[in-house]
Length: 459
Image (cartoon, rainbow, N blue to C red):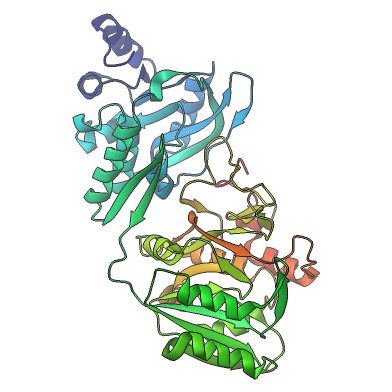
């Protein structure tokens, strides 16, 4: 029940706790703290906006018994009509943007006691607050990829908690020493704007041969328009543009780039056979920025603050690489993070109409993903060099997948942001000419870690 649990219920819960976990709805801090202090249970199971499936407690007990290091867990659910609601692997950045944990969250009572109990200021957003505090304390929070509950989407357990959630996130960011503002963009959906007031230097590395194409019925030199967007269409000012140009790049194109960039242009010549990885590595070697923005020449910037968004995320602890939301020319989605399944890679929500989303708002919030495309990716220069940059074994395809996996192997994450948006004028029907050797090389390196997609399970 909202706001408290009566004495009879408390007595029942205390009795039940001796047999299994304590079960109750998300209630006020004093009531929960009293239960935590006196219960003999090992688990506190909080149910909000749904009901446990008949074997839900057994699933929780089994999971926590198998994984003693896990201090809190959540799982999948279904709607009353049986539609699956599949939640992602634990995604701390995503929790700042929306509470995706679902109707059932279980926490070890010992972990709650180590936290010092609940924060009264969290009011009706205790679950979000506890999980974020556990993560900050270095405790393990895990996904149970099984159905634990039937979710009542019309239930009022979440009603009125949107402001409370925002305050919880603001408190948590402050507690972590993160300078950021939290904007409520719609109920239960927030945008975190991380401070980049000091504007570290970003080196925008673009490979090109100076090609032209017809976009929207107008012929344009792709790299010129991309660079114009970086310089004139972006609000982030501290950039240098590193152009890795093939020998056949027209002199007129280079001269136009010099006019647009002035002394912010660094021109690197590439006179070897095509190798995307080699070109990008050469550009990175010439770059001076703290961050590298790896960018294709066939893009157009939509959101002027795209670099503030990506740099702000990229400088957060544990983040290794950041990607953007990319659209085809017809405004359908090309990229919203990569998905890795069965040892191969694809794009989440590929071809979806712009504005479409899944039932847990995966395309509307910053979140960890399996990987991001190198058509637009931000990475710290020192991290890029630490992992050896792009592998020359992937001259045209899967070089970004390999890079993502190398970065993640260091313990860092890949993050997708829907708040950085660009057009990518790559054809949906383009034959990528993926070679058997590309696939076999990728799978020999990473197949074991690319079997099951756990971040973008609804896309």
